[in-house]
Structures are given as C-alpha cells and as structure tokens.
Image 1 (cartoon, rainbow, N blue to C red):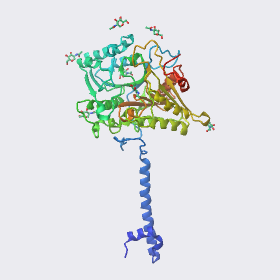
Image 2 (image 1 turned 135 degrees about the vertical axis):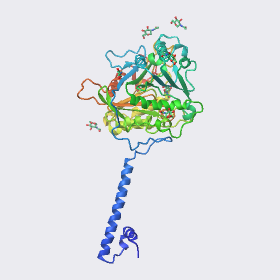
Image 3 (image 1 turned 180 degrees about the horizontal axis):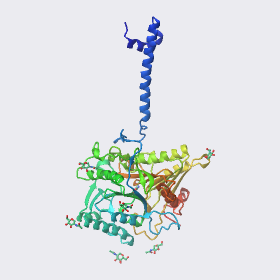
Image 4 (image 1 turned 60 degrees about the vertical axis):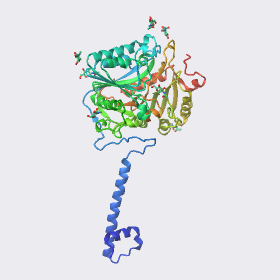
Length: 497
Ligand SMILES: *[C@@H]1O[C@H](CO)[C@@H](O)[C@H](O)[C@H]1NC(C)=O
Ligand SMILES: *[C@@H]1O[C@H](CO)[C@@H](O)[C@H](O)[C@H]1NC(C)=O
Ligand SMILES: *[C@@H]1O[C@H](CO)[C@@H](O)[C@H](O)[C@H]1NC(C)=O
Ligand SMILES: *[C@@H]1O[C@H](CO)[C@@H](O)[C@H](O)[C@H]1NC(C)=O
Ligand SMILES: *[C@@H]1O[C@H](CO)[C@@H](O)[C@H](O)[C@H]1NC(C)=O
Ligand SMILES: *[C@@H]1O[C@H](CO)[C@@H](O)[C@H](O)[C@H]1NC(C)=O
Ligand SMILES: *[C@@H]1O[C@H](CO)[C@@H](O)[C@H](O)[C@H]1NC(C)=O
C-alpha cells in the first residue's frame, strides 16, 4: 500500500499512470491533488511576490556593503515637526557679471559667516584641504580677504569656547597652509584621514554641521578662492536637527578613521546607521513648504547600514525625472580617472541616455572648461551630444562653461566652475563629486537630495528645485556657456569674448 502523500505526488507527476480503483478513491485523489496544487501555487506566489519586492540587481561593481532597507521603515519616512529652513548659496567669481535681474542665490561668504554667527556649541567641518589665506598659496591678492575673515571668525569661535572638529584629507593639497595649525593652537581638534590607505581615495567631502542643528553642504573647499575666484554651489539648512544629526553620522565615519592605524570596519556599529535615506527621506515643512530630503554618501565602504550611496542617489533622481534633467558638473568622464589602466564606466552616461531616449526627458549637461581641463573629456561629451535627435524626440544638449580669466591670471587653480549639482522637475541634488567612477567607488563625498511641493495655499513660494532650475538656466543661457561646436573651433577653454 502506498501512502496518501506518495499517491498524490505520483498523481501529479504521472497522472496518466495512476489507476484509481473506485469513485471514492478517485475523489480522494482529486482532493489530494487539488490540495497539493494549492500549496504549490501559494508557495510560488509568495516566492514571486518576494522576488518582485527585492530591489533590482546591481549592474555596477558593488564589492562593498549592501544598502538594505529594514522592515521597520515605513513608507512615509521620518516626519519632523521643527521648521527647517533651506537656503541655496553660491559663489560667483569676481568680474563675471551676469545679466541684470537674473536669479541668484545667497553669496557663499556671507552665508558661511552668518551660519557661524549662529554657532553656540560646536562646529564640525569635513574638508578636502584648507587654504583660507593668500600666504597659504603664496599669492598676494585682495580677493583673499574674505577667506582670511572666515579664518578669523573661526578663531573667534574657539575663543568663545565653541568646540571645533575638523576632518581633512591626508596627504593635503595645500602643504604650506598653516590654517589648521592656527586653529589647533586655539583648541580645534583636527584629524587627518588617510583614505588613500583605506579606500584608495581621498577625503573630498565638503560640509559643516553646526550645533548638531544646522548644516552646510556644497562644492566649495575651505579655500579663499572658493569665495571670490571659483564658481560654487551649495545649500545651508537651518534649524533641522534630524538632518544635521544624520549628516553628523557621516562626519563621525571620517572622525573614527582619522586616528593613527585606523582600519575600515567590516560593518559599521549600529549607531552609525542612518534612518533617513532614499527609501525613507525626512519629511517635514521647510518654511511651511512640504519637503522631502536625505543625504547620500560615497564611497560604499563609508556607507553604514541605511545610508544611500551617492551614485544610487544620483541614479534615483535621474530615473524619477519625466520632463528634464539639468546637470552642472566640473568634470564628466564615463571612466575611472585614478586607476591604471583606466576602466570604462558608463553608469551615469547610460542613465542620461536612457532618460532622453526612453522617456523623452530633456537632458542638459553643463561641464566646466578651464586651463586644466583634460581634453580627453571632449570625445565623451560629443558622444553624448550625438544622441540628440529632436525630430525623434531625443533631446540631449551639452555645453561647457568658461570663466574668463581676465586680469586674475596671478591666481593659480581658479577661474573655474566647480559646482556639482543636478535638477529635475522633481528634485534638486547638490553634491561634492565630479562625475567619474572614482568619486563613487573610492573617494569620499556627500550629496543632498531635496524635493519640495509648493502648497497652493501659499502663492509666491518657489520650491527649491525650481530655484535651482532658474540658477541652471541663468548659467546655461549666459554668454559663458558655449556649445561643443564652438569648442571644436579651438576655443581651448580660454574665453575669447
Ligand atoms: C601685497 O600687495 C600690496 C599692493 O598690491 C602691497 O601693498 C603689499 O605690501 C603686498 N604684500 C606683501 C606681503 O607682499
Ligand atoms: C573658556 O574656557 C576656559 C577654561 O574652561 C575658561 O577659563 C574661559 O573663561 C572660557 N571662556 C569663555 C569666553 O567662556
Ligand atoms: C532657528 O530657530 C530659532 C528659534 O528656534 C530662530 O530664532 C531662528 O531665527 C531660526 N533660524 C532660521 C535661520 O530660521
Ligand atoms: C557610536 O558609539 C561609540 C561608542 O559609544 C562612539 O564612540 C561613537 O562616536 C558613536 N558614533 C556615532 C556616529 O554616534
Ligand atoms: C514627439 O513628441 C510629440 C509630442 O509629444 C509627438 O506628437 C510626436 O509624434 C513625437 N514624435 C516622434 C517621432 O515620436
Ligand atoms: C581687473 O578687471 C576688472 C574688469 O574686468 C576691473 O574692474 C579691475 O579694475 C581690474 N583690476 C586690475 C587690478 O587691473
Ligand atoms: C574633480 O574635482 C576636483 C576638485 O573638486 C579637481 O581637483 C579635479 O581635478 C577634478 N577632476 C577630476 C577628473 O578628478
């Protein structure tokens, strides 16, 4: 005698071969078969559901920690009740007049000093290098005064017993700079992070956390040229302890790696985990405007659990765009820059092409062009531009932005657009990274993703992505933005106008 289960299995596998002996037995068989089919169906359904729920498999090298959303994260994100305030800030190089009445953000130097004025307890600075004074780079130019004023201000804060922690890259670019020695002598704690040893990158992040309540993030270095000679873009968020404490966790990853002989943890301790990310952005009213925001970080090795990777943040913002993607970056290379041999890395390039081709998104890319631009960048720009075909509704445009050197040729490594941002009809992305692989795999950086909805009850409120779009349009349509055709005629990134 075969057991019922065996019979049922046999009945499924070889239905033709089972010969039921009676009507009763046949009914029993059928019931068993139905039961088993139901169980299998349920199982397959569950499996299918689970697979469907999983994020798509990564298509680029992810050797590092995985970003795993946990069950406790609801779809609504972190609700905040405090009223955060977001201000776009920028630096426009001297002698770069923009058209009268054109939109502008708050001047960076003024915004930084104002932010430091609010400091009562602590200032934490993540920085690539410091050169806030003319002598730091051996230049005597009146445009270094704002940087010198900033250094003074930081010293005054230390004299008021405000604690200061600075994480900076080691080895440093500005070897002769004494800024950090000056600050350390007054009580600032300084840690030099040797990311070269840990991730083969550099600490390239640029952000501040003030009193665990306010943050600054953007492209500007702790360099006087960032205030008067280099074009920069950033954002300050005031009175926003949830976001500030989240960004502080990224600061802390640098801080613990800044001690001698530090090693990368295999997994970061739980208190470094973020609960504010792509899947669960912070939600609240910023100045009365419904806002979603989160910070991303790179490289993956410096992304504890829950931290959205910078590349994923960029891709997510691109993929959500239905109308336009406008990006302003210093360098654009669909390759690695600092590996030998270089590798092809078309991740962001493909995402732009796919948006333009598959969804009819209008893509505009504004890249910097200056004395130090590597000319091997142009074939990639021309290749992207070549996809454009307006009659087939594929719209891709590339321009280069040239800051005229004018009579500032005495200042090395200046007169360049150093901004790194992207804007779509949905969101603003403000970052610190050039667009090439290294900045997402080995070099540290952060990004701020923010999206606002203007409430119909408050006319006159301009969502941040609209403010950023206006700044992009101003630059795009300015005389300093030149199409690639102009480039082919040999402008060599030196302003002729
Ligand atoms: C810097 O230049 C100014 C004039 O442009 C001059 O008066 C001053 O002495 C110079 N300072 C140094 C340290 O060379
Ligand atoms: C700063 O702290 C030191 C030592 O704790 C103290 O002597 C000094 O008075 C404090 N200064 C201010 C401005 O609070
Ligand atoms: C931050 O909040 C404080 C009071 O909580 C307020 O006095 C201050 O004006 C706010 N700052 C900004 C920039 O909104
Ligand atoms: C996590 O906890 C450890 C030990 O208490 C502390 O040293 C570290 O600063 C904390 N890190 C963060 C990001 O809070
Ligand atoms: C392009 O888009 C317009 C409006 O969306 C549409 O009418 C037209 O058929 C499209 N052309 C092609 C070639 O897809
Ligand atoms: C540099 O050029 C600007 C205009 O482009 C002019 O206003 C300024 O006076 C010049 N400065 C010097 C030192 O020549
Ligand atoms: C990227 O940006 C940094 C400054 O932010 C600059 O020094 C560097 O040359 C840029 N280009 C590349 C390809 O890294």
